[in-house]
Amino acid sequence: MKQLLALLAAMACATLPALASPGGISGHVVRESNGHAIAGVPVFIYKMPVKQGDEPVASMRTDGRGFFSDVALPLGRYLVATRIGTQIVGCSVDDVYDGFMTRMKVAIADQDSQCSGPHVRTALVNPALTSDVYYITGSP
Image (cartoon, rainbow, N blue to C red; front, side, top):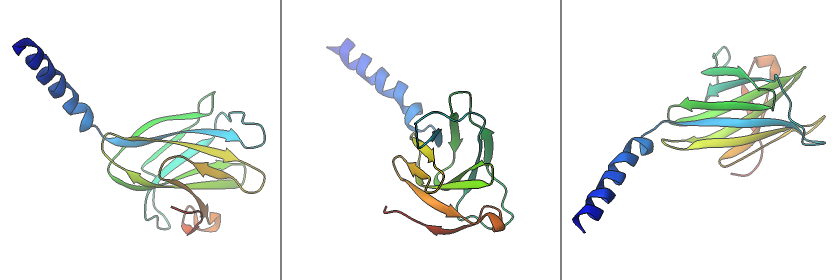
């Protein structure tokens, strides 16, 4: 019995660093019409609220399968912006918190592109003001 308790205590201690690990965002960019992945899409992550001239806290391109990797971030709200040609798609990520990686999907369409995932909403971005968010759509 003592050995079992010691083993359980050791396992609990081993999981504590995982609980304190940073949160973050990862995602998949696809074409809404057919679900095919889009490779090489620029992805920019901004801390909210975003103001004109703010630099992204992270930037990358999607890989050959349309994914962008786990990006560790401090607690907070973020805007994930992707650009295909002249179209900018913004996604508001409402909650990044310790130990939780928000997995999101960006479905690119000719008109109404969509963002989905836990705590993720589609956000309209004004390209004339770089990446300023001027209106967020969807329900929480």
